[in-house]
Length: 99
Image (tube, rainbow, N blue to C red; front, side, top):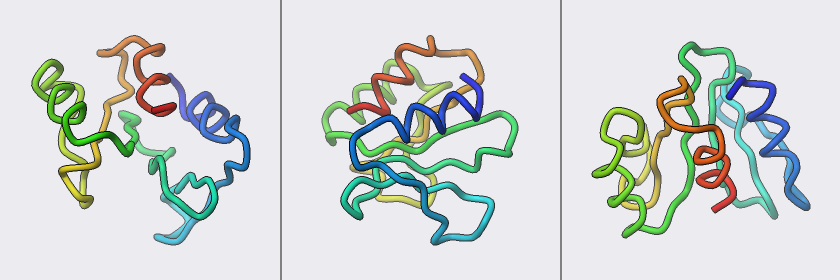
């Protein structure tokens, strides 16, 4: 998944918008002022932090330890950081963002 594809996906949800509360280098995607995804779109390899149900977050980390890690600088119970470097299928990354 490329940065452009990730941005397009995040902005495809009804009411979604991009914000930059942490500075111009970090895209924060929200719906109704609630964060659902955070990414530094210019960083390589690309990664995205996504909000997740606690049980599923833990399960994903256990199943994909090299591609899904606890959310960077976020509440580790509710957030995962997902590598978008090809180690996971794009469809799986999309599912995590959509969740």
